Image (cartoon, rainbow, N blue to C red; front, side):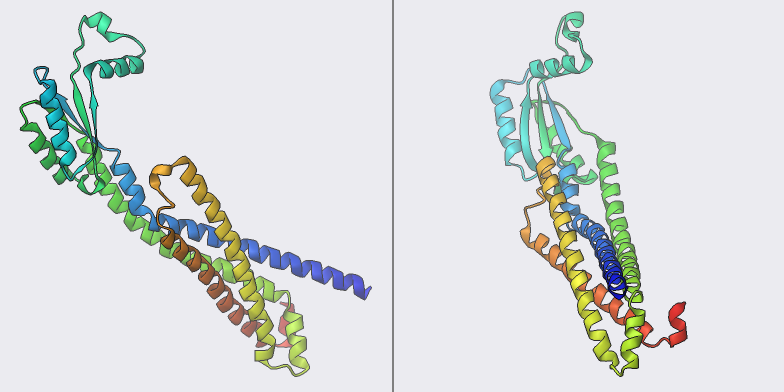
Length: 292
């Protein structure tokens, strides 16, 4: 009978440890993803900004030599990330594909113009700088019109600032939630051993002696949960790198190393502190209070 009860207690203890590790890993995984987002906010915002293009429509009278000279001049500008020439014929084919019919047959001529698409570096994607670039380009004699999505630039600028602010707010809030959830999981783990703690006290064991194995087990659980969380985050990183390589998420391995180290330290620190206060509570309980 005593052996079966002992086996039951061990199974219950293992189940308790597994639930604690899962809880810690899940919380640290979500916290790590948020940390990754914070570290990569600028990279992500730069990626979206650099999808913005200024389209320079050229005069029909513009000569090929003049167009090439203009392209060369634009490529030398510090704001230009890439420059792509789009002929009126290519533009017509693309437009026909989009609308599903050959519009030139109806019109009898191609009304589109040769154009140069200029993809702008992220630092220059602001309303003021874009307007300045537009003004300079429009002065060229080969240019018919300069066009870009002004409302989109305004929206990007405002939303990126707003998103950055809310990410910081959510980071602080989620850190607090992480502490509360991990603390609750650790308290439940220690609660399952409250009778063992009281028995050790009754035979004369000191509080430090009783607390020591609990603290060590808490550190082990924190490390295990952190390792599981890190593996989960690494999987997400490789998935993002495979399907969204433009974000260049693996570019700064030092930052990723700091993030993983931070997850490990947070896991150890929170479990250590939680275990300390949980054991202190049960060490100070009277025998009759153990049943509540």
